[in-house]
Length: 383
Image (cartoon, rainbow, N blue to C red; front, side, top):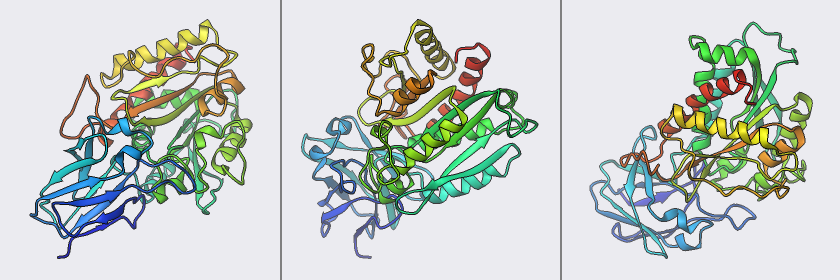
């Protein structure tokens, strides 16, 4: 077989500089469309079975987060089911790794991808359960559906309004697929009718979930932007159907339901931790909201050692919140807890798994943990 590099599939992103010699394969990551962002890669190497291959990403130092390559290992799979990590080296200019494939084709990615096919299949599975409604909020710029699930207790009135309204969104940044793996774990647990905690949480709350805020960017292989090059997590103060319909449509629906609690799920390229970023900089922040945030983070750390409270982003000073960000905008608009969860592309420093790093499976387990944390928050009135 002839050695080949391909990325012409859902989420694919790479350009070939040279690939005639398996020991010197040189590649470059492409920019997001109409944007300076670049970091996400996903491609297939074929025709190299049992050959010693060394791959270089030549423009690694020019990517959006070059520190993300320090201590990073490449997500690798032969069957697109099990993803393991291949150690890499970053010399300040290029990212390099070596492998001898045992299969005719092998895949490499910045993180284990979450395909639109899997998104559609999981939506069909979840929406088939009692108490779950699948809603189409509208259409993206590339003509894709923006899907939302509305979840209540199976015995609740669908139009009941007095319960808490919880919103959870993921993949504003499409090159952060750990966010959608988290959603899968969280929803699988939340919709388990043999799980007493999940049943009670649904009894107390109307839950609205957008598993993929950016299907266009996901398909195009973008890191952070939609089809028009808009970073959706900077559009919450000025969204429009022309540039950022994904945010506009979610904000429109939030205005109809109200918001009592919001989670925005993300991944961080450089920091090897799971952490919550709060909204301390909004003008209506107070000591009570600070207490609720601290209690929520302590609860998560107690439930799952993969979560920690020591490391994260610096707190915003009072009255300095950037309202272009989702969590800040929602917290300011609705006076409610609105948090951003960040997960690593690398591994967790305190609970490492060298073979897989931070992975889809671990993301899903962390997602399931949030069912307990959210239930405790509701019943302890920490929201």
